[in-house]
Image (cartoon, rainbow, N blue to C red):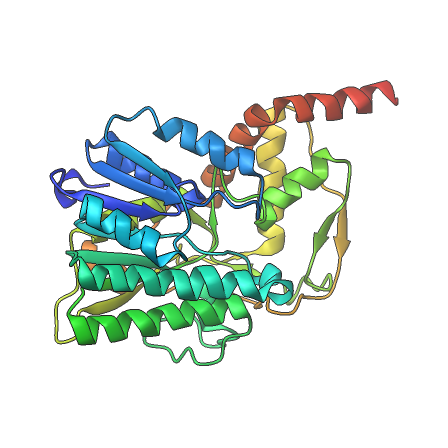
Length: 353
């Protein structure tokens, strides 16, 4: 993150501060001496202990204030804005996950629609210099044209999660138009790295392996038509956000959308093989996942591929971390963080020989 882009005199409100991206962004800003107000409801969509572990890293910073609450509660959000008057707001709180939205639509509407509406309303009544919010590559749906560009039509989402993210973009545009709130939406492409989300495929593959279970790959075992993903390492995501924070959009309607992706889609099978090698390096032994191939799941898309030209033009940055480098950092962290589970797995394996 370029120091020149960060204004240390400002107060930054980060929703979803105990989440994957929220944690890393909070830490980066705090490391540079910024004042950060973090809010998170610490829900149990995935392992709460991991969220608490992230928070433990943040609470020692003198300039960090944490509020355990929910953005879907309007009076709570207004109270926070009234007390702290944030200059810049980064809304990363959301109910995540494509597949989960098929079975649990209510939580997506509460968090992603009602919650974001509350943030917009608070920015309206307590004016901010910039509202940056998380959108998602999922808004592109089954877009066949690659790479995905921000100007592409995104009116055909294939999951409720994607619908809520597209709705956020429309809501933000409207509030920018009506109330002159500078807003920037970020379409993230498959973010990964240490302390990441356990519901993401790469994390799940590791969990399955150390539980002695096969991994499920939803591509029908069709290697010629494998799934492609634009995997983006967490440091690149945070760098991109950081450069945009003090660069609010200008123009008649002060709203802009950016892709943050690696602009280098990888075959899912190549990604899995790279993950196997990363764990082999971390453990100094040959690691190979037991694989089961199944049909693609409803709501999944065959390929994600970001054009990053708009971001590069705006702030001179393009994500460049390779999956070899990024997955090695993840594997090293995983082996350390879950060392008891890892050791137990190998001790069982040795004793059964």
